Image (cartoon, rainbow, N blue to C red; front, side, top):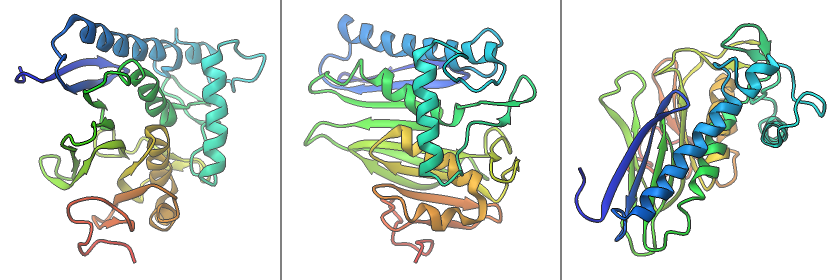
Length: 268
C-alpha cells in the first residue's frame, strides 16, 4: 500500500494490466474510488465492443467486415472507423486497419492498434477534473500522464525489448503520453499493411507526445513501417521516438526527452 497522498489501483482489462496511479489529498476518499471504478467500467465496456478475441463483441459479430453505414449502428464503432481512416492518411498507409489477420481467423477490419489509446483517453475523462491530483494511467505500457503545476514529473522507464529487466532510458513528463509498440511481449504480431506480411525490421518503438491516441498509432505504424521508421518518425510534428531495430541498434529522433537524449543514438 502506498503512503498518504498516493494510491494505485490495478485491474486486468482488455487482456492486459491497467493501472491508475493518483497523487493528491483525496486519494482515499469514496468519491475518488467511485471515479476510478468508472474508469475501469468504461474500459470493460469498450472491450465488449472492440475485442477481436471475443466472438460476442460487436466487432466479433461483424467477423472482420468493414463497419460501413449498414454494417453496424454502434456509434463508437463508426467513430473508431473514422479515426482509422484518418490514421491511415496521417501515416501514409503504415497504419491500416482494413485488412489485417484476425485472432479468430481470416482477414478483416481490426482497429486494435488505435483502440487502446483512444479508450484510455476516453476513460481518463472521469479523473480530469480532480483538482490538485496528479494522474498516471498505464494500460499495458501505453501511459497517459498529468501533473499539476509545481508538482514533480512522472518518471516512465523504457524497457529493453531484449532484456526486460533493463531500462533503455527514462523520460520525465508532467503531461501527455508515452506509448510503446513492438515484439517483446507478444512476438511478431504487427502486420505491415503495405506488404501484407508480419513486420520484423523493428523490435520496439516508444513515442512521446501530447495525445495517447496518436502516440499509440504512430508507435504501431513505425513498427509496421519497418526500415523507413526512423526517418518517418523524425518528421512527426510534436512527437518524438526511441526505437530498437531488429539487429539491436537503439536510435532516437531529435527532441527525444529521455535522460540520454544527447547520447550516441540520436538521429542526425
